[in-house]
Length: 264
Ligand SMILES: Nc1ncnc2c1ncn2[C@@H]1O[C@H](COP(=O)(O)OP(=O)(O)OP(=O)(O)O)[C@@H](O)[C@H]1O
Ligand SMILES: [Mg+2]
Image 1 (cartoon, rainbow, N blue to C red):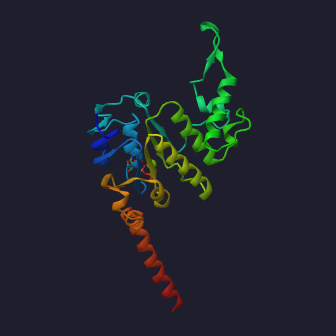
Image 2 (image 1 turned 90 degrees about the vertical axis):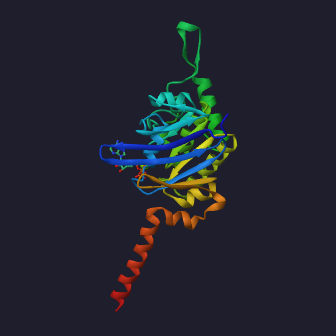
Image 3 (image 1 turned 180 degrees about the vertical axis):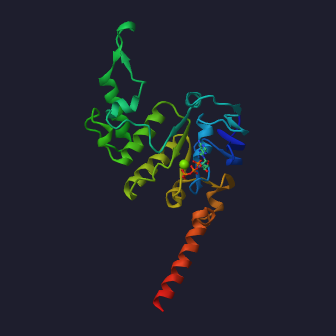
């Protein structure tokens, strides 16, 4: 049995002439939080979509629990315990918290041909699960649209865990959140990893990634700049490795020069 739950070996993906990914190698263990960092267009979403069964890689291989794996559809990936929470979450705002939690996998009751949706059981499970992460749901029949962004993000993560995810892939889970809600979501991610899940956390925000990540992979224009365990890299180094970091330093110098010349 491989010590790695997921391995990406030399993955490349092309969209016509666009080289979205070239020779990307990355691996992660059970219980590990790997942060995938990179500027807009670096290839982060494309990489995780090869793991989620949305795109087939043009080159390279994906190994899950030691076995080379080809996903024909997102369902294949889900069946292998790889759950992806996209930025738009795939929650339906007008539907209830409970319905969103189960989304077609509702508990049923009654004899075979008379089976009906067991609403009491579903409400109880949804409220219990949300309660475990400190979100008090008074009325699980309340529409998801009434929850805050952080609560919705937690619901999507909690749903993936309930349905048996082994690998949790989160695409920018904190990008739309304020400081408090981002910290609620980040704490929940750490708890999920402590239960043995492997987490791939995609983010632009080094300040969100650094406190929770065990390792960091930086993508730049489709290529990996390497994977670093936390002990081998500082927050500042990560920032400057992301293209945005260098450009922001340049911007700061340019702005200072503009200020100086306007003062003269
Ligand atoms: N379906 C597609 N067809 C054509 N080009 C695509 C497709 N998906 C992604 N690309 C291109 O591949 C590159 C990588 O895109 P990707 O969405 O993976 O970046 P990202 O790192 O997730 O960026 P962001 O931080 O903005 O979400 C970009 O140049 C993008 O335009
Ligand atoms: Mg993206």
